[in-house]
Amino acid sequence: MPSKSLLPDNPTDTTNQALRPLAERMRPRTLDEMVGQKRLLTSGSALRRAIEGGHMHSMILWGPPGCGKTTLALLLARYADAEFVAISAVLSGLPQVREVLAEAQRRYDTGRRTVLFVDEVHRFNKVQQDAFLPHIERGSIIFVGATTENPSFELNSALLSRCRVHVLEAVSADDIVIALKHALQDAEHGLGGRGIRIDVGLLAQIAHAADGDVRRALTLLEIAAELAGEGGEIGEATLQQVLADRTRRFDKGGDQFYDQISALHKCVRSSNPDAALYWLARMLDGGADPAYLARRLTRMAVEDIGLADPRALQMAVDAWDSYDRLGSPEGDLALAQLTIYLASTAKSNAAYAAWNAARKDVAAYGTQDVPLHFRNAPTKLMKSLGHGKDYQYDHDVDGGVALDQTGFPDAMGERVYYQPVERGLEIKLKEKLDVLRSARKQARENSGRRSGKQGNDQ
Image (tube, rainbow, N blue to C red; front, side, top):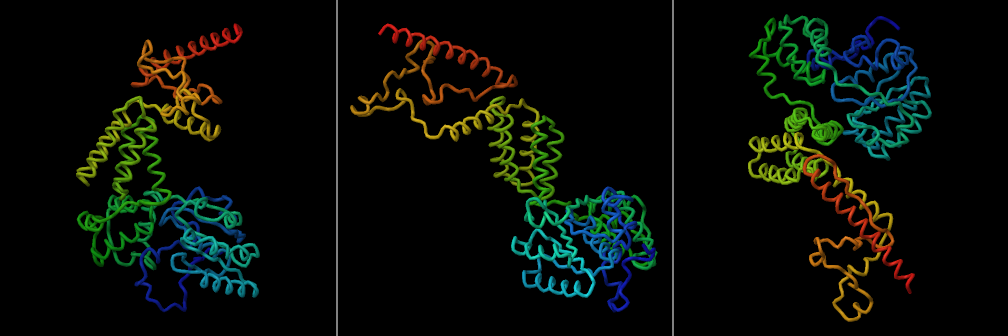
């Protein structure tokens, strides 16, 4: 490959370069200039060999904002000496897509391929996604779709089967610092000609504030440089002014959201209150709906704690009610206290497992008749049909439990769903139920022997 820049400025472009955002001017011009993505683009990796060899394949680039998806697509086009065309699924409809594909076909017929970059590809519906399929198969386009969402859920299987999915990661703070230093030193495209000075520790602050997004980091640096002025120094006060309104990366409806609520739930389940508290703070800081978090914490109380500590459910409801009354930030503490308690107390999913087992039997056995002894008999006809016959009123039985009275439909026999664990209050429940179940089994066996003897006597 030639050593010259792969993304030279267009000599016919009369746009004032100084008016372009710093992040746009500093786009990497070779693979070596890209920061982050070491796993994907390391020397000798399959994707790097394909790019450098000009052997392109259609692909989906899945990763968070600012990790280099657009830049990688631009480099694909330059290394393959192909035309680069970009569309956004947010702004383009099917007529625009068809127009772009028709132009790509005409270009292909003249011997030149097109790298078609589709940003936010997950926003296209199935019909729009299907429009690309014949052109990908024909090879008239190298399709590059960029998405921040899980392709397995957002893209149809036909498109996925024709593309390779490459996962890009959020860029580390150390790598972002490298990009910032490059922007400060580059006199042609960056800030190198303006004499801007900044301590490396403050660069690290910018990198951390960018939260894995190189584009955001360069934008923050550019704003700080504007405040410092030509030949000025970006100091602590200036930087704090720039970073005052920053927000962390958070997607209220996508993978990041569900990954974080999953982490919160699993840290509660594994009795790690410190980690659980961290994920709660992350989600509240990112703008998650506190009512949603209260609902999920209540679910944890019944799913993962259950009868090992019945107080957990009441505490969850109380915390939810407290948040409704107080709002943020005071109500956040109620959710935090609940999270700590749920993660610290005894755990059991025995009730959850029992409920699922009962539902499974309902589906498997269908509509079974209620045993006759359990049926009400308000009329003479119903009594004559045997409704309520032989029912034992437990309060009138010695010990207060009619041990030989079955509670299930005849076709099923007695079942055991609930298996208490030896943790928390369920230790006591287990002791009681073990005794009761053993006594029931013995009573049924005795009843069966008596029935058999009576049958033989007759």
